[in-house]
Length: 187
Image (cartoon, rainbow, N blue to C red; front, side, top):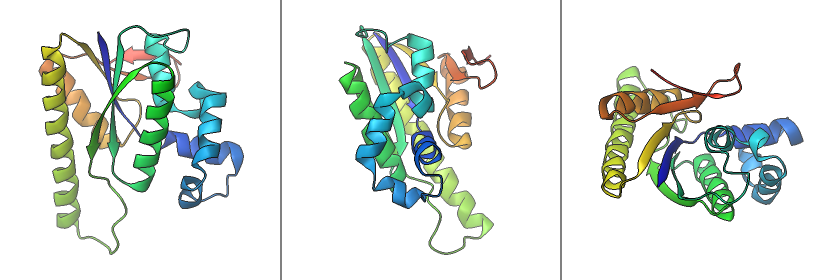
């Protein structure tokens, strides 16, 4: 069984806004989930960095994937939940088994934060993500899964955590290189 663990960002929402209505705010775009799904279905690789990189690595859009399992790491912000929901539905429609790892989001705070509070919040959320991913990898390895970490989408700090985990646990980490247009495995 091949298992890809992906960080997810909001490229789907940003790409939808750029292609459809550039002046649409993120909050307004969230209310257009049916249109966003249609946009994703029309050109999945162009719509979503996560789908593009997974396709590049596995070629899953060409036919029915065999033994492909995907875990989506997503933030519990409104945008994060929406992207997760749309990607999960899309992948399941392609006969991909989907797991999830929800983590606390990095929403803009209601009031300005001082540096110490911002550091504490970010560190706590990233530690939570790291712990959940380590637990998930251990569970999947017991099921004899071939695991790869895809760090194309998401918040840059999440990518750093996945890279560190990959090196520590000896799990391949890859991302879709924007210039090369192919996935590269990080050393």
